[in-house]
Amino acid sequence: MEKKKKIVVIGGTACGPKAAARARRCDQQAQITIIEQEENLSVATCGLPYYVSGVIDSRQQLIQRDCDFFRDVLNIDVLTLTRAVAIDRKAHRVEVLNLGTNRASTIEYDRLVLATGSLPAVPDLRGKDLNGIFTLSKIGEAQAIRDSVSPRKIKKAVIIGAGLIGLEMAEAFASQGLEVSVVEALDWVLPALLDFESAAYVEKHLRQNGVKLFLGQSLTGFEGDKDGRVSRVITEKTELEADLALLAIGVKPNAGLAEDAGLEIGATGGVAVNAHLQTSDPDIYAGGDCVENVHMVTGQKILAPLGSTANKHGRVIGTNITGGDETFPGVLGTSIAKVFDYNVGRVGLSQWQAEKAGYEVTSSLVPGYEHATYYPKGKEIMVKLVAEKATKRLLGGQVVGPGETAKRVDVLATALTFSATADDLANTDLAYAPPYNSALDPLHNAANVIRNKRSGYARALTPMEVEHKLKSGDDFIFLDVRSPGEWEAFRIEAPQSRLLPLRELRRKLDKLPRDAEIVIFCHSSVRAYQAQRILDGAGFKNIKFMDGSIAAWPYEISTERKAPPPF
Image 1 (cartoon, rainbow, N blue to C red):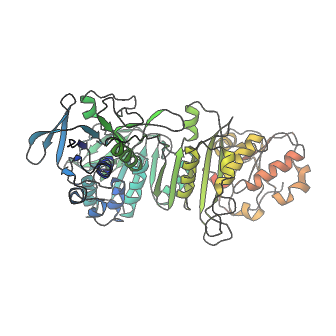
Image 2: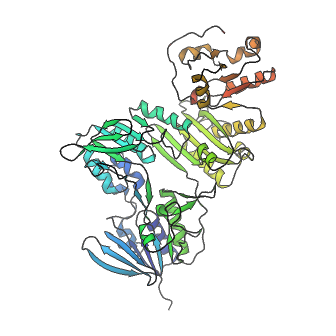
């Protein structure tokens, strides 16, 4: 009779339970054990901000599969409140400690799975141990935050870090009636995910919802009151009163157990694994937040601490530890978040990441609507696409706004997976009916802008480049081709601004100096591009339009009623 394979899984959040469940489905005879230091398995930690806000009522809703399910249905041994403290690779044993009894023991394995996750980054700063300073990675931490907020004694919350967790928690705290401030060391929100233009679009919405943003400011420490509770958050530029502080500056791989066992650790700090998710020890596999991944665009090693990635890892590992031969191709960093009424998604590389990686890029910034404009209640979205200039291969995309962004991000993730170009995307046969989409999806339009730029038909400046020219007092004409009514309602105030509606442009060409630099804008760049082509055809030589136009303008806009000046 064949010996039963002993499989031990360390870690019970996402990757570990998935690997164990897959292993059981592939091998009904294996002896499988999960070791988890917390009380529960399969906790949906991505839902913790919504538990704090009260959208999710009960912490039990966050437990996807309880221990009894693993024992009764999958016949898997579950050791909760148990910590793996050491791995003896030579003897194929794991030393564990029962946290309830403080009793040590060992468990033998034929195949070992490390799914130890990640740890919140906590800077070693003055006051970091004060009461009222939290991180958010476990259900117990979410419960402690919720218990602190629910008595309604707390008025001011300061979040350090404007990443996904930070912004989701900004909404959670605001929904509880707190005054919310967000501190971010870099110059815009979601800096690891978005470019400045997309982030600025989100920042406007945050401010409209009462969130105070302190960007480009590093945390330097905390001050407490006489009871040892945080009362002030100190940055290099300001001091903020705080009844509660949340550290949301990122996570690091929980790779200490692997490192102590002599396994190879990658340059990212994550456990090094091959395409089969096998570590430097062929009998030990690893997945989830604790490992490094291959970025499918650049081929470089990165960290990807996402539940979606962890679950994919788990399936691959479960297959392979039971004799299968499956590989994991890598990640694209696909992410999405709800930020108040905005849906914020991205995939692949941002423009600054692409340029840092050595790509010469072409980008487009296209405002649009989630479905046909003539169908009622359409909501705005803004698409940014990044493509390699020489080949038009898509490198990344960002979609933000109150409208439907998830399906666009998923389309882009699919396109990037198969190395699609802007030409491919422009001709992708997406579903169309007025309640669901326009005849040309905003993704089609964004791809076509890149194609027009590559062909030489379109020449554009970003809003940031235009703002720099305006501030520098450059001598150019900033030509608004909207209607007089639109100008009166709101406009970009600048000495260089002029109004010449598109419908009047052809018959008033003599009003424009042919030797002047002209930058054209409208509401969303559709009319601006048309105006650029008209002026090109009329022989004007120094003509550009502003990418995204007013809809993508992240700076001040005047809403004072004012008639346009004579041209």
